[in-house]
Image (cartoon, rainbow, N blue to C red):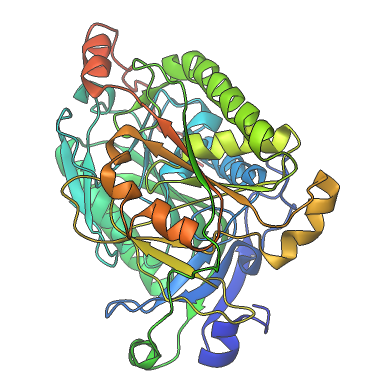
Length: 457
């Protein structure tokens, strides 16, 4: 780990690299070797169970990231998953909220018959099939809401995608719950980084043996997280972070509607099938064109940060990639339910933060957004794109359930962003109707069962 990481220099948190994986598996925008230090940075959070935070540089959650880098990381992880599966069909499950987009990337890369991500949002029109708990997370309950259930309930290998494996306990707990509900003989756990110790791996292997199932693990890089004694107490004693920066002049705000068919899933909350691909890509192209034209009319030559909302990651990511491919300087990241420690110090990844009212009805806990500015390392790119300003336009992509009065209220996302001086474009996406998906898929052929023997690697 480089010595200029603030949490390493000042608190002694070390992210030690052990091995890179998958070099040469795919040609993409990423370098062949991916050390731990290029994939994650040490951050902090005030959590009595876990005071450190592994901030991904390739996920597009906390850090504004080139969308093509995010897609490249997902593609490379997908290639590793394909190598573990061989020629076998699979179902892919992404973990909410951080890995919903990453899981979709992996599913698209391997051509999975079905992609589903867990959700923490109550959807009245959807049926919750089952769920599981996550121990160290701020929001712990995961619900599965496939429409209908049989797109997920089968005996195909299951690929579980998360952004990181710290101890493996969360993954094993999820596999236990899912195995008890719908047992399978083969699981693949895919993550950007794997930070398990030898003891963690031994517990993981014992749990797999107990279940009587094969569990493969793949990652872009593996390493170790070394924490100083008393870190929880140290972080708890640090001054309260300063959130919601303000500017002398409030930024502008406008809203546009993005077209999206009600019969096409906008993401994996209710499942997206391989048979949805053509319709999804066609809908994406239309939505991207509407967004690109509007930005060209009002914000020509301005850099853009596309902001997804919590679990809505993949579609905003793809829209951001379309803008970047059209020659617009673009970054991508999303809001989150997870509070983290903000510190405006060089070498610390979370330099500023926003706390805002949850826009969804019935939600009481605040939501968060970090950074949301063009970071110093990327400023040199703006001239290459022809940008005449380093102050980015923030394009917020919201689906219909989050398009509420709370979104625009005092203390809501639009309010805190414009108060910081940012110009904000709110792009509202209608999204799919889970009842329509359920009805149409109930009349279609189910996902094929796995009749092949497991391949020995």
